[in-house]
Amino acid sequence: MFLSNRDFPNPFCYIGDMSEHPVIFDTTDGQQLRINMIGSWLKRRFGRKIVKLSIDGGFTCPNRDGTKGTGGCLFCSGSGSGDMASSIGSVSADQIRLALNDQIWLLSDKWPQAGYIAYFQNHTNTYAPAEHLRDLFTAALGQPVVSGLAIATRSDCISDEVLDLLEELDRQTFLWVELGLQTIHDETARAMNLCHTLADYDYAVARLHSRGIRTVTHLIAGLPGESRRMMLESVKHVCQPLHDHSSHLFGLKLHMLNVVRSSALPLEYPGYVPFESIDDYTDFVVEALELVPPDITIHRISGDAPRRDLIAPEWSWQKRTILNEIHRKMRERNTWQGRRSSF
Ligand code: SF4
View 1 (spheres, rainbow, N blue to C red):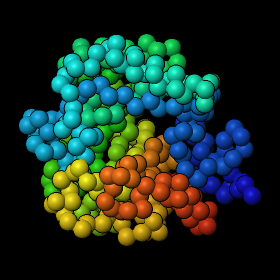
View 2: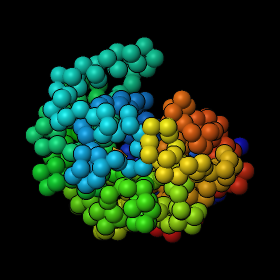
View 3: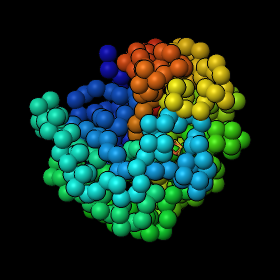
């Protein structure tokens, strides 16, 4: 049974331009969505399925090369961080074009009408001179079916030159910048060796927003020493209206800590388990989503660590089960994203 709009009285559901701020409870196919998932948002925005293609631009990370720290964030896996990263310039614009072509070719049978977003995901994707970044990002955008760019980075790695470049790209294409915050609590950030602070994050968000650039924030739930209240404080902080009070963050990526073999975390916190059960984790996610304004797109609510690398939670690889359980609980409780948001 579909619920009527009156069942969703939050005014955030009805404001804005449909192409940019979809009405999340009233979609084109008549379904009502309790979560503003980015996949559905992109489909409405572009009028077709949009697939993210993960690209390795050969970047390293200042939290591994000694600029900000060494050893990396405690939860960062060797293969996903600076350990295995190449030096700047080791990946050329031609290699970016080839890597994208290969992935598009592989997916074209499955989704012949799809568009693509080139997602610079590995390591810190603005940690290089702006001219080198321009070469790589422009190469990705040169592919006719690539409709946009997603660039993952650290809050403390956006120089003025990089910000100018991002603004320029934002005028040419659909762009978002992903910032790995993980927690607003600086004591946890120190314990996890993140080597950045909440002040770095707030400053980066303000600068990106002042240039009109969409921002997606990455939070990790279940970091050692954090209570549920602390995790929800992180969610509330990043969901506050941005400094001109006219809008929110574009997106939120939220998932449980995954303790993986190749990271330093199991040595520093032996036996640590972030959430006891799927029930425990999904209860947290439902509570957190109720605090997230409905115009904020949700980019992830489950982990995606490879099963072979995973130590804890040992159920974290069961992505479909976790997502189904979140949706089931939201239906059962007749709740939705933003229901308890005060912003
Ligand atoms: S998680 Fe990101 S910032 Fe932290 S060490 Fe790994 S690549 Fe660097």
